[in-house]
Length: 271
Image (cartoon, rainbow, N blue to C red; front, side, top):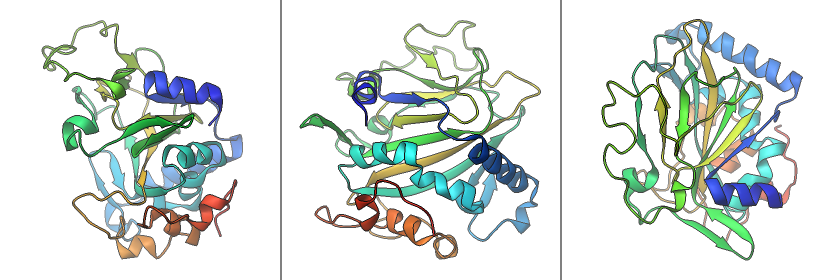
């Protein structure tokens, strides 16, 4: 991470990285997403399922999407936040039309959903350690007032519980103006958002009737983090089989003293 990225992430709990994808990378990803969307559900690759505008394990649909798990402009951030012990554990392709997200997706964070004891955000020796975060790669534009991802900057370090209804007293009838403490993230196609799962976030009603939301959510934890699933592969065998060796290594659970071979590389190329 650069000093500027480190400062902004520590201050707000997220980073908006602009123009992360090259024109070729963006076009290849957009083409892959379109093919995935047009594929009948019963003909999707094994291990990919569709529900409510999301393709579970959709990152594995095409190599142009899988490669984003180790993208050179985000890889250094992944390394630092996990103290060089990264584990990729989920990749969902979101392709939502105007019929989706017609109600507010409730504000939440890992502290509230999974218990404050389970997640860590620490600054030590001038670097940030965060054991649960996500990276969003955007394939379509989001403009002010569109809706979509909303965050509460700085809440990743909140010392007090969020009072119920403080921002949306009536989620079924949200106010016209967003509370000044909240930010509706307006990423453009080719941008990436790095967000701590400790950051309070949600989804605003999607207002455009002619434009779609298309992005990839990649989730990372430390390689020794255990959830209720235990020490097993985060993806089903049929997905693991078609991943490149580098992605499989990134997804593996490991002891906290182990350093994966891919971590020793500044740039990782899928083979």
